[in-house]
Length: 124
Image 1: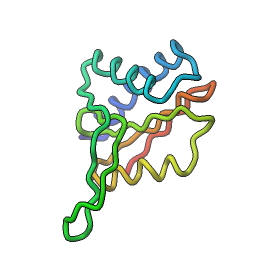
Image 2: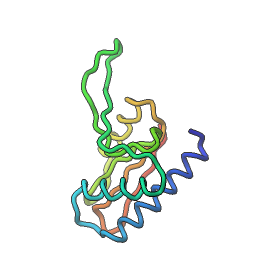
Image 3: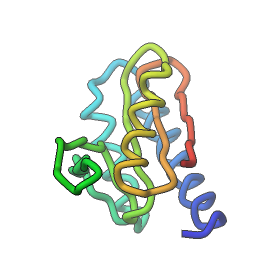
Image 4: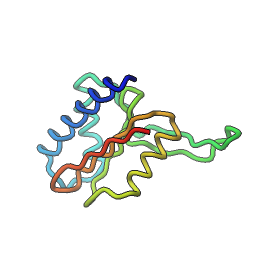
């Protein structure tokens, strides 16, 4: 995915997130926002996979465990959905782990739980 493609997709995700937050406001469970965002992104023509399993491997290829990413968009951007008071360094570390485990370069953390929507884009 080119940087321009990533920017365009991120803009599309931001718009859908803002529209969803504007409609639902804050106070719902994370799963409600995940489903709502997946629905809106799918309807806009993006390929969306929810609860995407990411194996974590040791040096020799042995699977050590699995991460579960909330949403994978077009097999090239991971979305981590939150419904909390504020984003923290733990949330950033979580999505960076997903990106390292998959080799995917682009990720976005979206927090629907605050009065003002919080969005943080990361590039590995």
